[in-house]
Image (cartoon, rainbow, N blue to C red; front, side, top):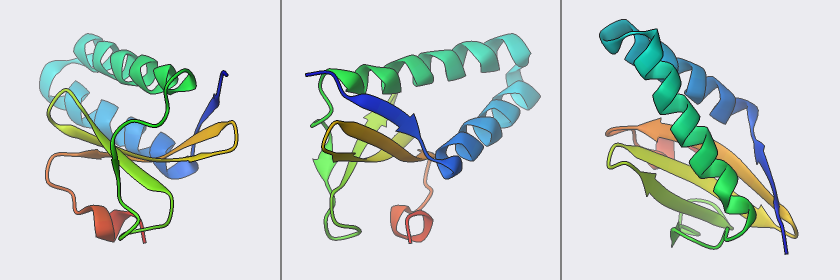
Length: 99
C-alpha cells in the first residue's frame, strides 16, 4: 500500500527556516541540497511510514524519527496519509513545538 505524504504548514515553515539557517552559514547550494535530501527522505514514508518512536505521551498517534543526527521529524499516520507535522533542528523541545 502506498501512503500519501503531506507537510503541515508548520513543517513547511520549519523547512524554510532551516534553509535560511544553512544558507546563511554555508551558502544556497548546500542549503538546497540538504533540504532536497530531507524532503526526499520524508517522501519515502509513502512505503514504510510506521518507523520511528511512538510518542503518545506528547500527542496521540505521534511518531518521531531522526534524520542525519540533527533533525527530528514529527509525524502522524492515519489511514493512508502521513502528515509531517514538524521538522525540528538540534535541541528544540518536542513538547513545546507540538502543543
